[in-house]
Image (cartoon, rainbow, N blue to C red):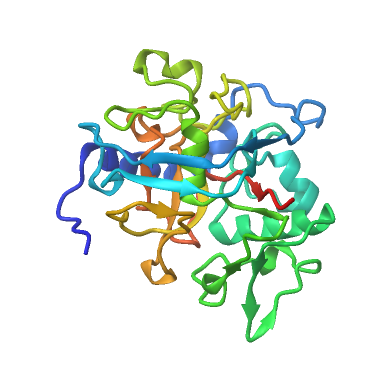
Length: 313
């Protein structure tokens, strides 16, 4: 059983940062000073990048690493997957749920959608799949009956803990959109940066170069794709908004594992990855696991996501 008798400085910094983020949500709209493209012309088109299957060492033994980033273990991913090169934008969100249902605190078409809980991210994936003629991955039964995703309204998505939605099943063989597993996320974020004995950010292992790749410690999200991508052509994998993953939070295995999909729902929390614009630089390293404020119903201005698809051909 994992012990939480002390908080290391990374987790403590994130807890403070996310608490401040929640408080700042009340004034976030007024705080947005950067350029946005509210007319829709500047919002990027979704590009799905193929991530080729393979194996990698997951976790970190860096001196700043938290205990839940260990043990470092070999993960084998047996299927290619497609990952969006940017976080889901508000323009993309509105195309699915309508402008009246944009939950974001800081608004702009090319900004990442935020203030999104895990349930909302799941619903978006299924509704986008249907919109594009793909087969949804997620199945949710409410009172014994499968949710009708076509007619599902934004206000029907839970904003408090929901036991039915907590039993969501993902069919990874389907071709629709879904959230990445925690392992898929770290594998894609690392790219060619395979180091586990030092801090790795998406795009660099050099702290002095982090600002080339990451929006961090700026107290608000910024338009997607305005920093450099990592070696896989993915933007904002570290920083900007913290990204929901499929997995329920749990301890890492002590042996090699193939296609991991997380712990059971009894863990009560999902995992978010990548850190956010509110976080310290160290908290945005690719091996850091955010679970303190990761209950599926939780949301604030630091919570966003990106989508993936299994390659099925």
